[in-house]
Amino acid sequence: MTYLDNAATTFPKADTVLEAMVSTYRKIGVSPGRGSYDLAIEAEDLVQTVRRKVAAFFGGTDPNRVIFTSNATDALNIAIQGIAGRGDHVVSTHLEHNSVLRPLHHLCRKGLLEYDLVPFDGNGYISPDDIAVLFRANTRLVVVCHAANVLGTIQPIAEIGRICAERGVPLLVDAAQSAGLALYDRVDLYCAQDLTNHIGLMTITVKGIDPQDVGAILDADFDIQVRAGLHCAPLVHQHMGTLDMAGTVRLSPGHSTTSHDIEVTIKAVQTIATHNRMGNA
Ligand SMILES: Cc1ncc(COP(=O)(O)O)c(C=O)c1O
Image 1 (cartoon, rainbow, N blue to C red):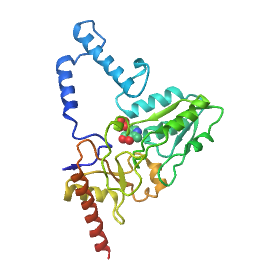
Image 2 (cartoon, rainbow, N blue to C red):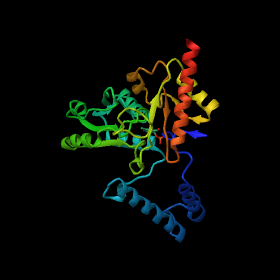
Image 3 (cartoon, rainbow, N blue to C red):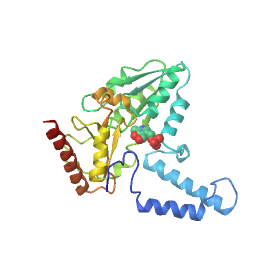
Image 4 (tube, rainbow, N blue to C red):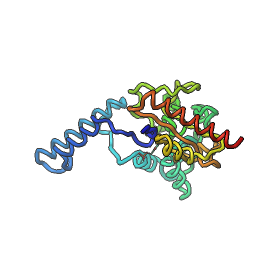
């Protein structure tokens, strides 16, 4: 089995993660900070320790500003709806996941706010200058994904942050695809393009075959698990011209992916493409 859908969720989970979860639930699986008995206090201490570690990891100064949510969609909704209010203007990008696009669209349709979306260039990057020109007097929030979930491109978040700070506008960074990755060495994808500002994720299409079919063949014939479709980012496909063909195939390696896995996958995709070409000849 070659699992290449780590951009959706990591699999297999690292043993250290599984062991930590099981032992925590086994030993102190009680409500943290609710009761005054020892176990509840111990559970609360653990949550505070994690808060401190998360704050340090992201370079934050105040652990009490770290909140845990059930997923990234939840966090993004809380941030967007908590910061942007009636009459505000928001700037975001065409690279965003639906968890950003849908709340913005919903709030705009209700007449509560307006938003503009910055397009990306041919390589999948946002220009900070394009964000700057969209600022209005009532711009209250900028939302940008750090690493794009379809293209894998890492956006110039420091420069965007500088522009926002100059204007006193909060920047909400969707780090669903990037948080933690900085610690890992990038897997060599044997890809010709410049991977300097790129996470370990690539998106492909095989000419003449529906991406869903490519995904199904990879699974059935080669035991390779990938994600096919729009990846909850429809505007990216609109720009790439892959909307009509129902999206792309996304290959996302993880901590357990080996060079062999990648070689096997490249060969499998080549085989699918060659058979298709011969079939169409
Ligand atoms: C860039 C990006 N943002 C947000 C999300 C939503 O994450 P979650 O499934 O944790 O709600 C995803 C999910 O894949 C994503 O790739």
